[in-house]
Image (cartoon, rainbow, N blue to C red; front, side):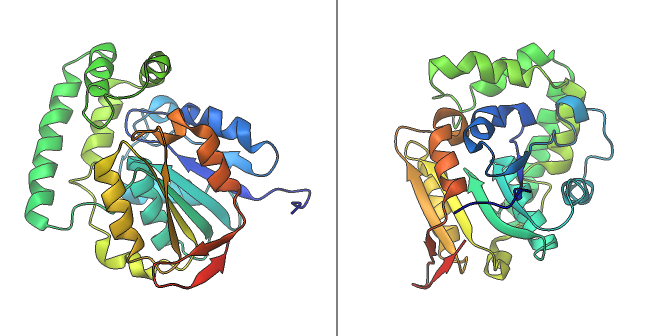
Length: 257
């Protein structure tokens, strides 16, 4: 298959504490198949001072990146935001790729407890240097098994941000602050690929549960990878982004992406 002279746009949304630069290994593998756009989300890196840091503002930031339809991919927090974008602008998002992502917390009480915990963490972040928090965040259980060869690069990427910016991002875009999308997954009509690492048991289970609710969905479990599949196995993410084979849905139907 060959693209037209103007390749389709692909928006890539990074995770909490990361930046658009974290997608560099994936973008290099895409070559000219996509026009890749990897913005810094509000509160992060070059957008660290952008305010307000709200879901509504970030959705509009993404929608304004390009005219017309676009493919959309997101990792972790960026994946959760990507889900909100796809539901807010279904006519714009041609396909959706989610890496280590969830639709949020379905239980309201659990969501409120998480919001309060995130608020406490945000206050702690503001009292630390970015270097100290970057080290602390790297020890988060879901991230702690990142291969040693990638640790320095991930740390350097986190240093692009400021404590104040990350605190604002956690308050405005954290899991406790965003509404659950579990009951809206059935509204997604574009093809959806859910990518998880085989060492990431929690998000592998979430991906399979999401796939049961999304009409056109496919789960890919990437061998020898943890939560940050796009860092550990960018080749596998590139393969998924370039895939043109039919997507098998949870209901047994298929659709060509």
